[in-house]
Image 1 (cartoon, rainbow, N blue to C red):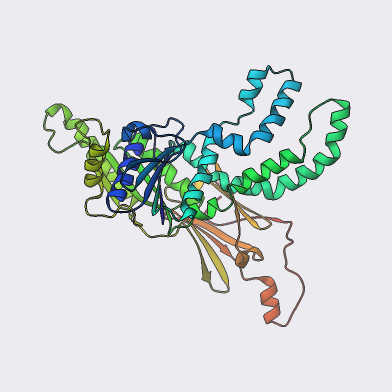
Image 2 (image 1 turned 30 degrees about the vertical axis):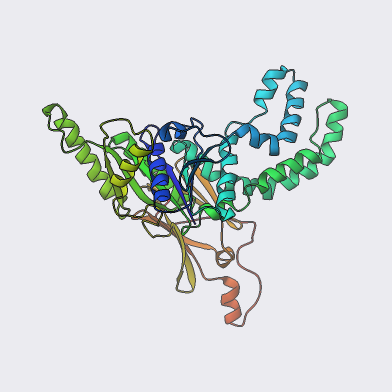
Amino acid sequence: MRVLLFTGKGGVGKTTTAAATALRCADAGLRTIVLSTDPAHSLSDALDVDLGDAPSRIAPRLFGQQMDAQARMEDTWVEIQAWLMDVFSWAGVAAIEAEELSVIPGLDEIFSLSDIKTYADSGDWDVVVVDCAPTAETLRLLSLPEILRWYMDRVFPMSRKVNKVVSPILGRVAGLPAPGDDVFGSAERFYDRLDGVRELLCDTERTSVRLVVNPERLVVAEARRTHTYLSLFGYRVDAVVANRLLPEAVSDPWFDRWKALHAEHLSAIEEGFSPLPILRAELAPSELVGLEALREFGAILYGETDPSVLLHEGEPIEVVRKGTGYELVIDLPFADKEDLELGRRDDELLIRVGSYRRAMLLPDSLRRRPVGAASLRDGRLRVTFAGDARDERARAGGGGSPSRSRGSTDRASGGSR
């Protein structure tokens, strides 16, 4: 079973590419479903069929879906929403405004994650194709499972304990509606829907991200940043789609400058994203709407290649043995040292690249080991963990506790800040 995620800057043709890929998989005999997590929901327009909240048959072995966030919310969010509406009403917010404010922006994206996992685990599908929102929303979407895990593991238990002590006081003194166990239970069910999603999306044998770009400077620059951030969170990019290239058949001198720019940007794409395969598609002479147009586009894009297979192998995160210690290697293509910050807190490695921050829970083999050094070279962050002090003393016949306390915060030294 394969999960294929398509993302890119708005307007580059990611919906068309996702729809064409799904159709090509279905035509090859694979049971395929294509989903849209883009709030704009243009998937239905590209396929030229009506899609709703339930999977709809589009063609033999091909189904599509555009989720109804309201229906998902009524199933999981209803108790939380009712409490939020009471709080807003207590604060003097009118009923209609309170109802609108009680729905957090981005809920549809969160619920789409649980749908991806449900379909992947059902055994009913060979391929799940996801038409993601533009890159900024996609990065927020794909970082949600880890952020929610951190919140539920650390903040949620404490919040529940504090609530039982403080809520009765606030209720008596200020009249503020306090969340009950039903609200916390709803939050737990909400989190449970996402349980295992990160493991699925970071399973590099099952899930791949494909970046769709146009030969334009701003588009390519955003794709480079996206590749870096996806790698930071452990997602594998296995191909880049260079879409809307000017055809060689265009010979009008007016387009000479455009063709030269396209050639320059295409060369930058090939060199910058190497060794990823670059799938190419020329600018179509008409709108790519409907099954036949998408079939032609898919044939041009993939040729004899099976679109469902893993197009490039390579792990975004690896742990390798190095002497008596270990080295954590993280692919961060296009990252600059000036944009990188690295720290250590207890069992977590704290990494910030640009505006994105990740608290990476370290594997057991690294948790007891202090950070020795870090460097960023050739798009790879290497963090060295020294030999375990307890192991070294045990081998030497010594004893005692590690030289660092678990509550300490380490700062990595070396080639990065």
